[in-house]
Image (cartoon, rainbow, N blue to C red; front, side, top):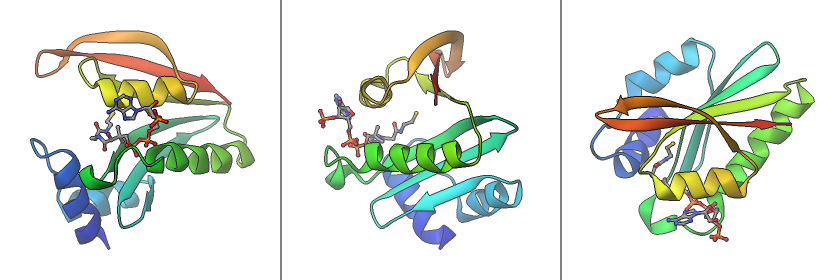
Length: 128
Ligand SMILES: CC(C)(COP(=O)(O)OP(=O)(O)OC[C@H]1O[C@@H](n2cnc3c(N)ncnc32)[C@H](O)[C@@H]1OP(=O)(O)O)[C@@H](O)C(=O)NCCC(=O)NCCS
């Protein structure tokens, strides 16, 4: 299962692919991983807050609502378990992801200068 997610991750993040073992480690460390043939999302919960670690959709399956659906599923699960806030980080130049998060109710809450190889990280959060 982690092999398939790693293959999908490599298509989504060709410059920084994660190995199957990375996903196994994330799972062992308490992260939740939801994956289908065309998409994956990884998140973790600490008390009443959760962080989206990563999300990706296969290039040929984009703009079909898969990422928005995964965010919705995660949000529903987190609400049931008493989580009040979801946060994440996104590269300033990642227009698709920033649009996805904004469209789904995430707002900018801060910035880490030059966080990703010289590109700022935008911090975003959503109260649920
Ligand atoms: C970001 C990503 C996960 C979006 O997945 P997706 O399944 O295509 O997103 P959705 O179809 O659910 O899009 C939902 C909304 O997000 C916005 N959006 C998504 N991709 C967009 C793009 N390329 N340009 C502008 N807006 C975009 C739109 O508002 C879209 O709604 P619409 O299609 O009705 O206009 C996908 O582009 C991806 O895997 N990118 C590479 C990996 C990555 O950067 N992950 C995020 C790391 S923080």
